[in-house]
Length: 617
Image (cartoon, rainbow, N blue to C red; front, side, top):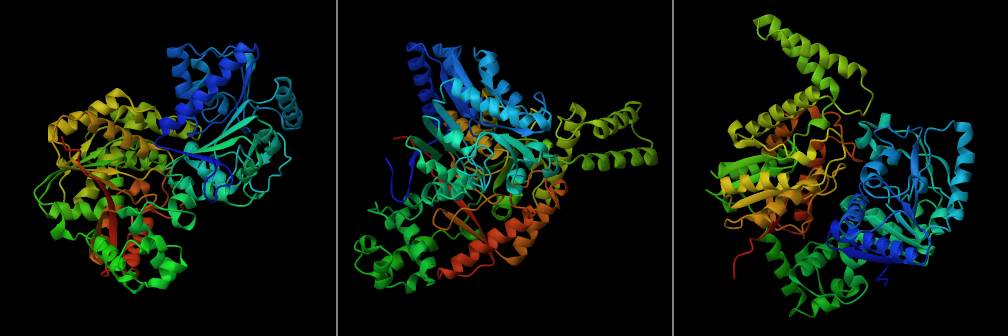
């Protein structure tokens, strides 16, 4: 069923797990139906973070429900070129590690483009892949992700609707998006072999999956915009059996979610009312208290207006609701037990440095729990710099032992010879971990907190040495639960931004929420913060914490202490600005919008969303 402005069927699910269960369940139906008919099930498969949950669910179905893959035939969408099959970044290796090595599929039924062929043989290889799809009877079910350019597979802007499997040049944005996996854009291949648009559209059924706020804008373009060769995903609108699966974050820009009053009836909750009035204020360029009857009627908000005695009453109600969200230091908690969970050793000061400083000034008992070491996000030159310092000072003060020169030599040799993106040695990982730790302590000391208020949890899921992490496991949850039981916090702050390029924020949030579900103490109030990748909107936020110019300066000074992330962070995402620049723009932008709405003027603001504790009945 299509809704509103959408030109293709869209399903919005509550979680990644629900999407994975639905798609894997459909694939299981096809496998069993084809098996009963004595025919193979043919699947088109994607790589990247998007389908991993689907593959994990398929593995579970194989192990726990005896789902067989002996008569399954697969065709992968793409592969980088050049790329050896056993390379850390190869999609051949990705598929083995995430699916094929865990099910009973016949290796002869697996088809993945070869990235290690001589260039002169690539065209013939592409034609052979096309013939193999036809010989298998065509693809029954095709899984797709969507790139920041709107690409499906590696069909970049400009791809024709009749394109077939071929070698393509990757768009700059695509390569920047992949930079996190390759430890730098310069290491990302410039070409790839991809299944073509026409080949994809010949699949009998298609599922496109997108999750996270960073996909919301391109999803709306693909789903609601005209078919356009500049956005390959729009071609799916021409398919009779394609479905787009989204989480709430990826669906945020759809008209039915962002401005539902433009397309139909709305359930006017308090949140929806605030969203609508804030939107109207921005659309008209008027402050809230200056909106009039005509503004509401001309912008399809008559049904909202009818719920109030007059437009003035509606304006005043929303004005008062937003005013109540603003909490200076005097309105923030005092003397409470607080734990701030920081996914990496810098998210605390980047996203919540302002409120953290005020909470400290209010004499709250604060512990900052750094969930991961962040050690893969340190350039090698930082390690060399610290080792050179150790080497020089060891000579100056005659400290160390016979192991120190050998360690320095071994690390230097490893860094000089390892290929870009290869997994670090244990010694290098430890050194990078310690670099992040000392930076984190220096940063919170800038906010006048003490070093002993920092806890480094070093959750196991992160300890792969690679960009791609393990799923959240039982021990990850136990470590957080143990901390909660020790400290008994009344408030916890959790990263709520889900668009970091490596997915660690999302996984850290999952770990905290799973621990809270099992926590036996009085449930704490949960504050979700953002800032590194996006900010909460005024309407979404429950708390708006104002900052003066000096307070923002101190916050930025704390961010500066993370020297390994400054100038050029290893994982910047598509936003090339430094983190402090993003923070300054977002915090000041929030305050400026508050001012334009007619509320008191502040220099900068942080925003938080609050989940109240579930109290026993």
